[in-house]
Image (cartoon, rainbow over all chains, first blue to last red; front, side, top):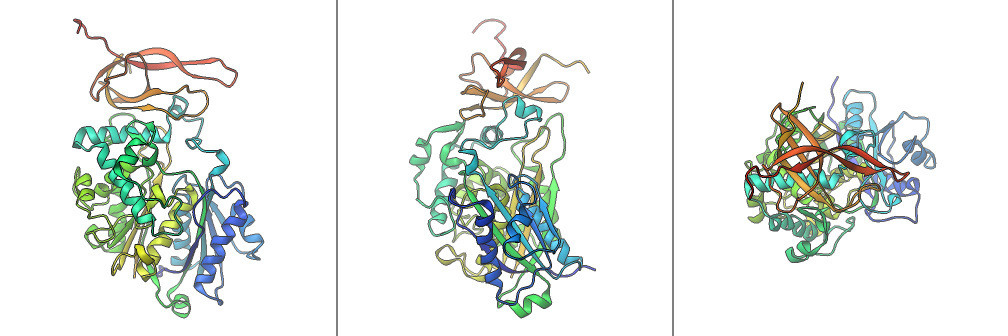
Length: 379
Length: 86
């Protein structure tokens, strides 16, 4: 039995450094906002919580003080895709008839690490040899620039767009507009990536409620259907790998488009995983928004701004909204739902009916990435 | 499988922010050996002007410093010297 799944409510905290709150309190803000968005009659049958550094039983710790106990609660860790992987489990629970309403949470507090690069799995050979996440993305960027002639001005352009969009997003961590010159003057992190080209460290939580058609009809004025929910992992390779193109994202996207019955040309708005500025250009290509090597051109032509052909990251993306890793995949869907409902304020993409969210990451040797998750949402 | 000591630099980056034990800046790179093996490692020596496609050779060196302050030795790479001078 496979049933249609809808998003009935969404909510999130502003992403920022939140040292005044525990992760449980912060997460409850997002959960209450999502429940409030659905309305007073909401009943939760099952919950999934995505987090990397939240610790054991993070979902139970969040929901206990809301009285949401006794129901099945599953905690999901999948690096940067933890939230989106929890979402996929929630979608499956409703689709397969196990639950009629599911709560999905993504949460993370990164300020506990005091800044710098994220701690990576120490047992991994590459990490033990000096790999850091910015370094991995930097090597991809270097190769991409080598093959396609992209420049650091192109990378800076991604940041300028992200900040401009984020200025209209109250949930965003970095809302001050920047110029290309300011981006290129920020300090070098891993050549060619400078500080402003890297997503900031912060804390945040996002939540959403999934429901069946029957329930969502009773609760929601504008139900948003989940058209596709796909998760893939990276392929292991010991030899040559084309690092100027994300095979993992392209493969996941192909499956998602197939599941939703749409193509990249049908997508009205996308939230993609711009952990580093160079990644956005490469993901334009892997998601099929343009040909290989044409990412910088798509950006320069303004096609990925709010009024362009395929607006990308109206929220400001990971670069500006922030990237508390386990929360990101759920926060992207919050933004997609606001866009599809027409509730995105000054960052609204006109008349959006199909939205795509893309969340990937996790660095271990021999894999493009640990995980990649795509969701397509339809009004 | 015996591996070559010389490979081609696929890509590289100079890292300025790293975990404890890795004195910055240092250069990292992916090196493709002719046997279709790609190795990740640090690149030492004259790294200014390093380019994609450069020939590099395997050397032993200090990869990081342990919490006790002891050097951890491993394989690294260094740009291969031109055979007939510059």
